[in-house]
Image 1 (cartoon, rainbow, N blue to C red):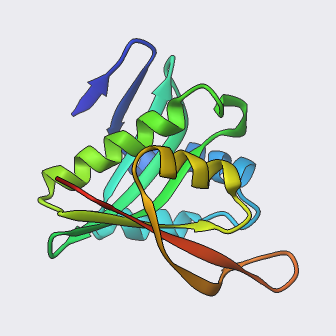
Image 2 (image 1 turned 180 degrees about the vertical axis):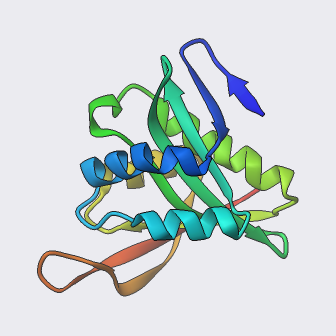
Length: 153
């Protein structure tokens, strides 16, 4: 199933997408997910989606849903495509996926230093609910994660 918009579409991630997904991850994050992690998410039947911009995979996201809760595990837009609304569209799409799985709330973590992502999530209606200290690996030591949540009405 693919969802089409004027210039981009969403479709379920396939194993054949992982090479491009890894390119996006490595371009976007200091500590990217590995191929094995994405393969495990696909095997676990998580909601794994890619976003194509004019036919090129430039984004992806992974959502886990169970017991009326969803956890947005990964959201990534290639740096060259950031700032044009694709991240917002991808997060909103994943919120719709959570709703389709009957989730009543959705959670995510964001690096404390990732102010741009934090503000994006906040503008979509996520609220800060806690901090996970030393959650993310960093170049030196570890970095806190801000835990955000959103009620899905």
